[in-house]
Amino acid sequence: MSPESFIINIPLFHTLSPEDRKRLASSIRRQSIKKGETLFRKGSEGTTLYVIIQGKIKIALPSMLGDEVVLALFSDGDFFGEMALLDGMPRSADAIALEDSELYVLNQSDFVAFLNSNANAIQAILRSLSQRLRKTDDLLQDTCFLNVSGRFAKKLLELAEENGRKIGDEIEFDIALTQTDLAKMVGASRESINKELRTLREKGLVSVQGNTICIHNLTRLKRRIK
Image 1 (cartoon, rainbow, N blue to C red):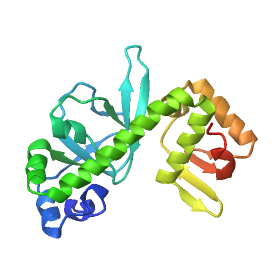
Image 2 (image 1 turned 180 degrees about the vertical axis):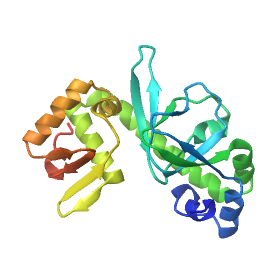
Image 3 (image 1 turned 45 degrees about the vertical axis):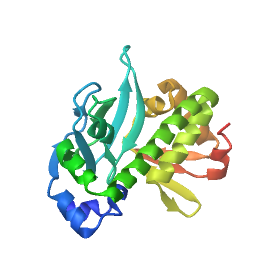
Image 4 (image 1 turned 90 degrees about the vertical axis):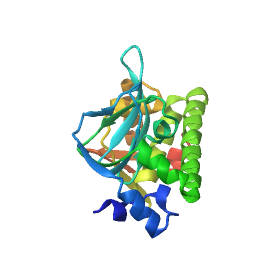
C-alpha cells in the first residue's frame, strides 16, 4: 500500500484534502524493525513521527532500578512520536517493537512545513494530543484510586475496546504482551497479574488461549472497577 492510500485511514489525517494527502505522502519514507528491537530510547533526539503500517510498538518509561511502566501500546494505523516532533525536546520514553513491524516515518522539517500550511491538520493533531493527555491523567488517577483488580479489569476492557472482535455476547482480542507487560501497564507485579488472571478464569469472566484473551462477561468485569 502506498503512503498516500495508507494515510487516508489514519484519524490524524482524515480531514485532509486529496491534494494535501498527496503532498504529505511525498515526504514519507518506510522503515522496518524486528521484534525486540528498540526504535528510540528516552532522552534520545526526537525529530520523527512514526505511523505503524503493520506490527505492534510499546511505549515504556524506564526506571533507575531497571523496571518500566508501559504507557501505551500501538498497532496498525496508530501514530506516535509527535511530541518530540513538535517541540524538539528529547524523547520522553522508550519505543520497543513487540513484533516485526513496518513503519512510515515523517521527519520534523517536512511535518512542520506541512502543518504551517494546513489549519485542519493542526486542529486534528491537537485533538489527538488532548486525548492522549487525558489517557495519561486516567492512568495516574487509576494508580492512586483503584486497587490492582480494578486497574487490571479496566485495562482489559480498554484493550478489548481498541482491538477486540465481538463474537455474540463475548469479545476477544489478540495481544503480543506477556504477563509482565500487562503488569507494567497497570503498575502491578507479574505475580499480582497472574493471580488476577487465575481469579478471572475461575469466575468464568475471561479465558486465555495463547495470545488471545476472550472476555465472556463484560458486565461482571466492569463491576470489578472499584
